[in-house]
Image (cartoon, rainbow, N blue to C red; front, side, top):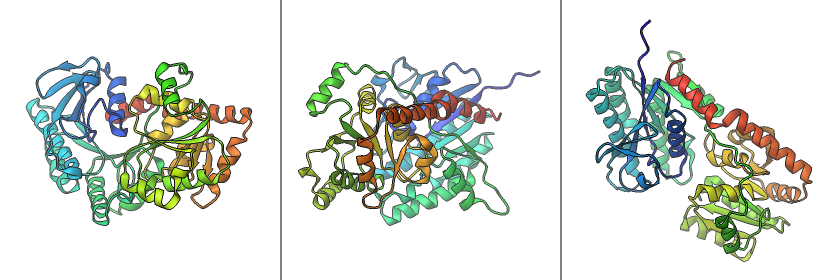
Length: 406
């Protein structure tokens, strides 16, 4: 019996290895868990310059092949140079990355490749690129991510472009891989037609259980001291500082609560939104409200999560959100915005709040008074949920089966 050829999988759409981000972490974990897999050979496109470009100094075990190529986790990585022209660079980066995949397939005569595109940014160029890959015997899979066209940070014309681009890419892809059951349902409801049902597969985003980290770590203790905090005496939120993550609701409701604990937000810079919320809420007068900024040290961030009294999750746009998974895997209590995507992930392992006035503040007051037995019960449910449904080994095994057509 003839031995089956190695499946070549090209990953397009992550920015740079060595930085923290949803797609970047996914690529890191997938190649890490499959680095000794003799059935799949990964090829990874990485940004060579600009914001979020690959930080080679952070990659352990890197092997240089040339100025523009290196090997990491036994994956072949290609440095893609981009024009630094603001948000539009993402479009040109993905197009350049797909062209690189095609050139490698042609040069090495690879006939059975999968090009897996993360995100739906390049609709206008997509049909032609897919046709070229098909001509070489390859397939193209797409991960639509969340509902990018609903994000308030984009202007109306940009949101219209995101929706337009999504429609092209979903319809043209050989398979659409959704990290949320609700996203998969949406794809079929919107894009299926009498003549064609979109081929989809549901594979969630992954996470890890992080329990029992050393709380006497000097870096963590210094962080507590610098921010005038104590272990288990703060609520926490981690995420991008954008309107659809409901910072206005979370801040307003925490200010309304009777909690004596602090509310710590580890988030990105957004001076415009910060000033808008300060003018509206006056949160700077409430000593419990603290903006910390970004923290990219993952060990420190894990300790901060584990030692929080509770996590408040306000994201309401998208599929499986990495920050929620990470919190379920490390924080004892999770107070989660009640939308379908979040309920799908958290199930009965979280407490839920609505955006209406008074909902979250009442829940915070109730959470402050929870007995330890109930805290332990919810913590155990959250860890079990991650272990049984969202652990990286489970997720990577599912990807292997999809890539191999099993």
